Length: 194
Ligand code: GAR
Image 1 (cartoon, helix red, strand yellow):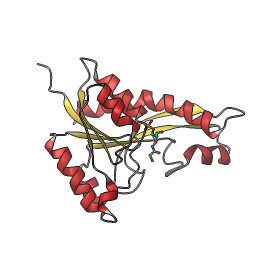
Image 2 (image 1 turned 30 degrees about the vertical axis):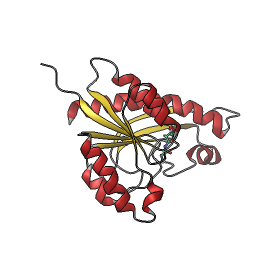
Image 3 (image 1 turned 90 degrees about the vertical axis):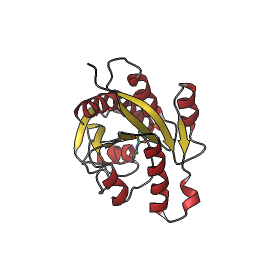
Image 4 (image 1 turned 180 degrees about the vertical axis):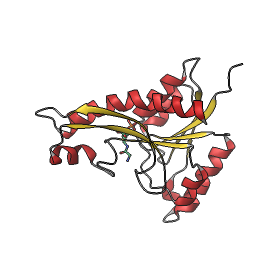
């Protein structure tokens, strides 16, 4: 008998192209996860309309309503995730740092995609920094989220070449294609094993 699909929430802050790649992959019958919810901390995130156009349930927890109280924001996130019976969380361009409390709630059940070959270039502006460092190979990483930023166990990586004449934008576009390939693969692998 087929296993029930894992219920996934994709957390976004912006355009949601990685979210869209997960939604597309999860439409396949044999895929072990379904995108049950797209949740944004920004009411104006472009990805929300994109998800709705695919028939996906969306929700917003606007972090600006909670001021400096990160845990109050995260308790609100947690309430929404619980209400939707979520098994797995995928961060996809979700630009909030998470507290150890929230990370602990999702230990082993929360993935992030980062636009670099971790442990190189943690944090922001990874493409600019890769070009400035003169690396020949850059890429993307899917990893479990741990309480230290961009540091949890790695699930999948893809390398892309840095080409002569690359700008942060051309390099970002090449890396993004790799992101869209590896995130659905990594989610498949994790959804099949938890
Ligand atoms: C992606 O490149 C993702 O790797 C990056 O933000 C972009 C979101 O694009 N995430 C981070 O930098 C996390 N620190 P998307 O909204 O089109 O998926």
